[in-house]
Each structure stands twice: as structure tokens, then as C-alpha cells.
Length: 353
Picture 1: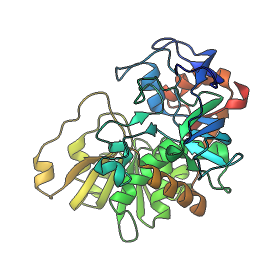
Picture 2: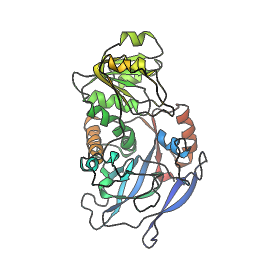
Picture 3: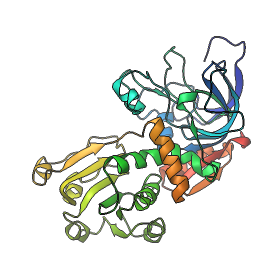
Picture 4: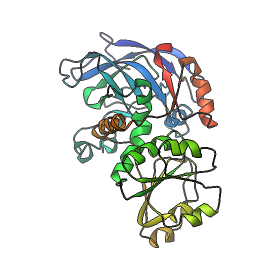
């Protein structure tokens, strides 16, 4: 927390005192508003699976007490004297990071997520002054103007919040690998990321196939814009679809039989991972060599692209399917996410905090 308490903002938060602990309702101090800062009154905060990994310290490096949340939607409450893009009352969002160096080639290109100095994450991170960051399970947050995005008027605030992680995580690779008319795209997994990816790929004009373990989500997948749906538990799926796809977007965080999925790519096709399993994947290099295929990964998107994604979502009516919960239901929501008992993203109503 900041050292100067002269003009700090007190905020109620949901805080995990240690790994795998129940959340506690407590308070923190947000930093004094600097000249280029925006103070946001948070309305909704999405629950991302990475919040659970972090709060359970499954990836290591957990800083406790921790306030998770990087899918933040709210309203501007105050602005610093040099802020020009936003005014009090504007509908705004904050995603996975809140600062970067601004000078390296990636920051200059609008790919702040790959900042060579190391991006400052929205929570469980240290800012460049060495202060801990606390996320969106909170009433208020103070963020530099350049890391705030505008939520279009025709996007509802609660549905917009998951787009700030799940939305940009899927939009960015689909755009980068040119999903569009004439392209055959497969989405692996029909969960929090997958159901948004289907909508984006469809809106971009690609032919969209969903690959999910069973057939129980088929009707929903088709309603989101999928053209085809195949169950991966059916072995004939992999023979029937061999060599079909230009792009496969893998949204699941479990280890797959990578060679099986690579066999579904056309020559020059790419398997892009946005889900991150805890254990390393294995594959045969021959699966790549025999079709000049690629394996790739993608990490969210920059601020410019996040704004582009929100505007695109508003224009094409892309919206996550959400279940809005009260602040006192977050522990239960984490348990439900872990047993895949959510369609498809939880969003916390911060007014209940």
C-alpha cells in the first residue's frame, strides 16, 4: 500500500489472508490520486480461473493477503489534473494489468502485456515503486489513465467485466492468426473462454467448429454461433477431422493429447494455447514437421486491442453468459468453478460488498 495516507481512498475488499483461505471482508487504502490517475467506483468484478490459481497459490509467488480480480467494470469517480480521456461518470473497465514501462518496443507497439521490464499486474504484483497491487474484488481502484478502457454504452456493465480477461484472451489470438472468412477455426473447450471464443470467431466470419469432451453442450455451442460440434471422446472425431483446420484455439487448462490435435491442422496450421495446464505438454516433433505446423501461445492483449475488442463485442452483440453473485458467495463460486458448475462466468456485484 502507498506510504502517503494524506489523500488515500479507503476501500472495502474481499481479501484472502493466505493460500486457500476463505475470503475476509476487510479494507485497504488505495493510493493518492496522481495527475494521470483515474479513481474508479467498481460495479462488477468477474471471477477468472486465474484468480483461483492465484488465491490458492498454485502458480507460486502468491502475495498475501491477496485481493484478486482483473475483470473490472465501473464508473469514474474522480480524475487527476492531467487526465483527458475520461471524466467523472464515464463507464470504464480495467483488465489484467495496470502499468508497463511505455518505452520498450512492445509497449510502443501496443503490446504492453509483453513489456520487457515486466508488466504490473492488476493484483498480486509489485508496481514500479515496490507497492503491492490489489485487484477488483474491491469497491474502488486507482489506475493510470493509459490502462483504463471505455465500456461502450450498449454493453451491459456486468457482462462487460469478463470480456476484460476472457474476451481479450480469445479475441487477440483469433485476430493475430487471421480468423475470418474462408478460414476454418476450431475452439477446444466450451467453458468460460471457449463460449466467448466461439462468438468472436463467428462474428469475424470464420467457419467455427467446437471440440468438447462430450455432446452435452452442443445446442449451446450452436446457439453461440458454432457451425459444427464434435465430441473428442469419440475416437472417430480425429480421423474425420484430420487435416481440416487453419487454426485451433485451445482454451482448456488440462493436458491434451497434443499430437492428436496437431493432426487436425492443415499444412501451415497453428495450434494456439490460451489455457495453461499445470504440467508440461508432450508432443512428437514429427507432428509439426509433416505439415509445417506450429504450436503457439497468446497472452491477453494490449490496451488498444482491448478497446478494439470491447467495441467489436458491442457492435456484434458478443457477450459472455454470466451468473451474477453477491460478495458473500465468492468462496462457493470458487468451488463451483473447480467442478465446472457454472455457465459460464461468475461476476461479483460489488454493491453487495
